Every structure is written in structure tokens, then in C-alpha cells.
Amino acid sequence: MSSDDEADPELVELLRQHFQGKLAVKEEADTGVLDGCEYIYDNCIDVAVDMRASKAAAETIFNKMADQGYSMSSWSEHELHPKTKDEATVDFIFTMDLLNFSFWSELPEDERFAIEYRGRRWTGYWSLVAGLQRALEEGIPITDPEFWRDERECNLEKLKYVFRSCTDEEMPMLKERLDCLQEASQVLYERYDCSAANLVDAADGSAARLVNLLAQDFKCFRDEHVYEGRTKPVRFLKRAQIFVADLWACFENQSFGEFHDIDKITMFADYRIPQILISLGTLYCSPTVTASIKDKKLLESGGKLEMQLRACSIWAVELIRREIKRQHPKADINAILIDFFLYDTIKEMEAQGKEPLPHHRTRSIWY
Ligand SMILES: Nc1nc2c(c(CN[C@H]3C=C[C@H](O)[C@@H]3O)cn2[C@@H]2O[C@H](COP(=O)(O)O)[C@@H](O)[C@H]2O)c(=O)[nH]1
Image (cartoon, rainbow, N blue to C red; front, side):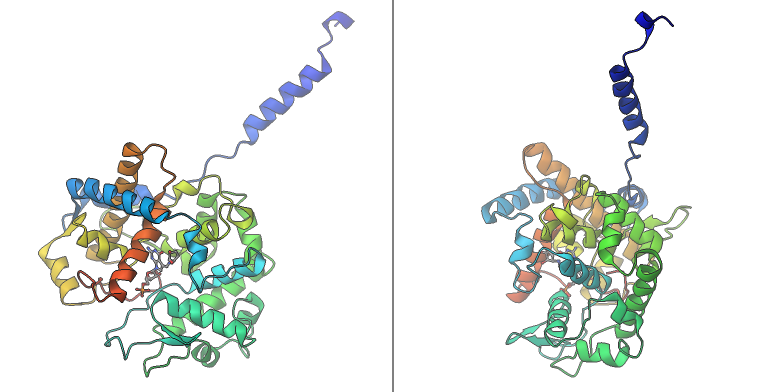
């Protein structure tokens, strides 16, 4: 090649970077949760979504959230949620969402499991948060994976003490909670140098990738179940998703909470959101499901009825989200904020003794 034909080295470098960048673009991760839930929604008969009620609910929810200025910063305004934006808070949220399941009780309000902390009685999810905060104040490193690994230190007796009740009822599923801590400590030790922050970093700023890592590496986060004839299990991944959402809301999309694809996170299929969706008329259930809920009968975890309730709830919130975005394209809203708002709303109704109907009863480690 004569010198005139020599390619411009700067141009060569630019082209190299351009194509290398293209090749390096990681395929966008996806959790597959919405696909599985849409499949159940399209193929089930015991639960359905009422389109008209969903549209009305979308407008009501949007207006109430706007009136309240509901945003991701609402998360940190809760009295018991951690306030510092550091690695200790990542550890706190990871521990919290490892154990964030099944607080409901058969007993009357004044006899149910409750934790006394800061002069108040905390029940449900807040009893978990209060128990963790109280333990840390007592010098028990309950959010440290190294502590979970040492069975002389972290065992059933210690967990009973950490979550000691101010009533005669113990926290439900304590043994299962200990199993979750021990499994998580083993996985963190083997793959993430005993650090939840390393696990978050491994997702490289992708919410979907972090959810998939949790489901892949931790059995206790792998909330997926076979549904009838479908070959692929249906994924709900409730605690994996709420872990990402809690990080995102706590750190306000900065630092450990910064995710470029946070809108891929769906509603968290627990036992509270279906309750409020039914009361809004968004979800309606067959007589069998309605009777089970009304009579507080157990719905089997991973059973057909329970999976329909969870899947249609996720799908209903997705439809509500789409309707809000259709009516208010500039609204800074996603399934997480809709979910958090609905949870806080039903909890306020419960506190005022105005629960419109019971929540469904399933006992499991998934929610
Ligand atoms: N879908 C959904 N499920 C949620 C939450 C929360 C708390 N999130 C906090 C973070 C931001 C929000 O503003 C909340 O302050 C707990 N749960 C689930 O509910 C059940 C506990 O019910 P109860 O026993 O009555 O407290 C149990 O399965 C628990 O895992 C949520 O937000 N969404």
C-alpha cells in the first residue's frame, strides 16, 4: 500500500472501539416473570382481571400517589428502615429480604406474634425490621454472613432471642429462616467473598441480572413453580425482586441502588397486594378461591389456585402500570412504586381496622 493509501490510524482506532463496543454490549437480561404470569393469566379460570376496574384503579392510584407525592424516597421515610447509604445498609436489606416472608397469624391482634421496640408493638413485616434493628442495637451482628456461618453463634436459640415476641406466639417459620441464613452464608462465602455488596456489584447495574443471580445461586430465593402442563416453571421471584427494589428505593437509584433496567422489576407476589386488588375489583376470583379467602382456609404453596392468584396479581399491576403510562406518559412510575403504594395503603386500612376482606393464607418461605 502506498503511503497515500495508509489508513488513518485515528480512524482505525475509532472504528475498532465502535465495533468492539457493539460486540461488548451485553444481551439485555430478563427475568421471565411477566411471560410466565401472562401464560397463567391467559390459561386460568379461577382468577381473572377486570379491565374496566383496572382502568379505574389506575386513575385512582395515580391520583393518590400524586397527591401524596409518593416516590422512591418514601421508602426511607419509614421509621424503621435503615437511613445510612452504605454497605451496612446493603447487608441489612439483604438480611431483611432473606427473611421477608410469612408473618401472618391465626391469633387475634392482641395475641399474635409481635416485637416490642422503641416503645411500640410491631407486627407483620415491621416485626422483622424491628427485630433486626433491636438485635444490632444489642450488639448481635445479625446482618453479618460470617455470624450466620458460625452455628455456635447463630442457631435456633439465638434466632428465637433476636425475634423474641412480647406475646406467647413465636415468630412463624423460625427454623426455615435459620436455614435461609445458613444457605445464604455458604453461597456468599463460596462465591462473593462473604459480601452481599459483591453480589450486587456482580450484576453490573442490571436489576434483571441481579434477580437472575439470586435465583441461580440461592435456592431460598428461587421462587418458581411448575404450573400444570407448562414445561418451564413459572417464576415469581418475589423476595429476589423486592431485594432489588428495596436497594433501588433506599439508595434512590444511586450507588448500590443504581440499576439501568429497574423497570423490568414486577409487583411482588405476596399476600397483601392480591387482597387490595380484589377489594378494588381489579381481580375477581371463582367461588372456590373466594370461599378459601373468606374462610381463611390454607391455600397450598405452589398449588394451582395460589399460583393463579399470584400470577394474575402480577399481571394486573402490569396492566395498571401500562394504563397509567398511557394516560400520563411523563409519569415517573413503575411497578415497584405502584406495589409499595398499594402495600402501604392496605396496611393503613388494616391499622384502622378497615381491611375490606381477609388476605389469602399460604404458609411458605416465598412471601
Ligand atoms: N408486595 C409487597 N409485599 C410486601 C411489601 C412489604 C414491605 N415493603 C416496604 C418497602 C416499601 C414499602 O413502602 C413498604 O414499607 C412486605 N411485603 C410482604 O407482605 C407480607 C407482609 O405483610 P404483613 O404481615 O401484613 O406485614 C409478606 O409477604 C412480606 O414479604 C411491599 O412493599 N410489597
